[in-house]
Length: 482
Image (cartoon, rainbow, N blue to C red; front, side, top):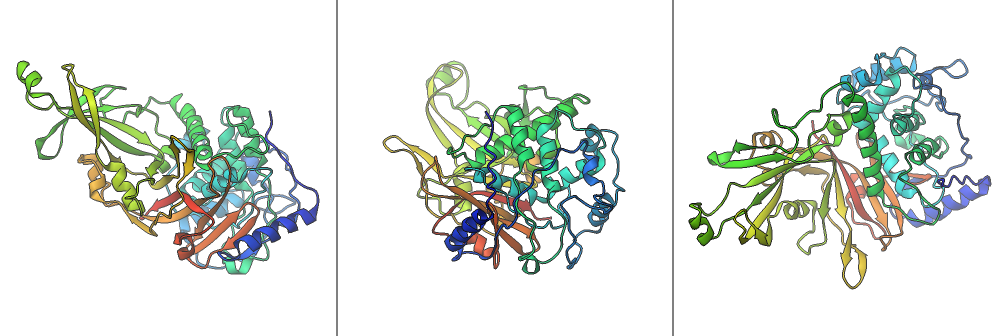
């Protein structure tokens, strides 16, 4: 079973598609750019280093065509790094393992020239995720460092990583302000290398006419890359446990605030740290508080409560419930996320039916915080329904101390601040259909709106924050302020 790769040969097709979408979105976005040239499939390169070889005697990527270079450089170190890579002077690591272990988190990346992605049949869910990852600076820098520094042929052990490296290679560096490049964009293309890698995985199969979910696709793609990296790293190093000295599923006592003793367990956290977990990975603390009844506790000489038991659980994005009438903002959604949950009829260690309390708190937050707004809920009579209401989200998100656990690890992350860097929207009213678009921060205060092959420039971040009649925010990307 293969993914559809329909590329209409009729150039008038693109004009009709563009005109229809431009009329639909003209009230929200200015500067839409039509796709004018039919994409041409490219042969698979023989190695990652081959992607950097000059073409026709010129340096840079095969898709590059020089444009006016204006604006200030954002980071001297990375400018030098990318310039050296384009000139064939890239640093060379001994292996992919060496590159992954040596990788350093960096939030500065040169702007790339925007480029549309062809929708070959209900593939908008994939296009918005690929665009969002491209404009996530730490993730982009990770792929570039591997592409530039690892000199060996493509292998079947890391198909998703290789596909994403080829994908970012399709975009050239260009610091031209958006206002000056709206009439001179590179033609859109089909991310066929990503399609091919997904087919090889034999997990994510799509048929024409079937709408998939953007969050599920992002989860599969990022988790898949993380697994590939973990396999490479774990073959040469032992797994890293979050709590020193603890083995998987072991527990220990920890003295917290006010000398309160708590039983701690790492549940599924033991894993090799990879660049993916260093970019997107955080940690939650799930605490269960179970009392004894008066009679049972007295009979066994026990007091009213056992020490709370906590599990530490890893996450790469947070799913926030927005269905409650109390949730009108992202901050409200966080309040609901950490609110204690009452569990009636819980059986304690004495076999007694008691009322227990469970609470999930933040313990460690990642450099890139991805928030999934749970828009689709199951109703007994109506089935799966979409939550249409507008949820207000800020340009700068400050994480309240009340959302964090009272541990030494959490103390280092309380009051962290993030800036909005991307929004993925869902259009339509049904969970099984609709359309996806996204607004993404390119550089400084330049915001773009992507709708498959169409690209628009937002007037300001206010356009990304505003309520919209035809779409609702579904996934939010926040990058930590540093």
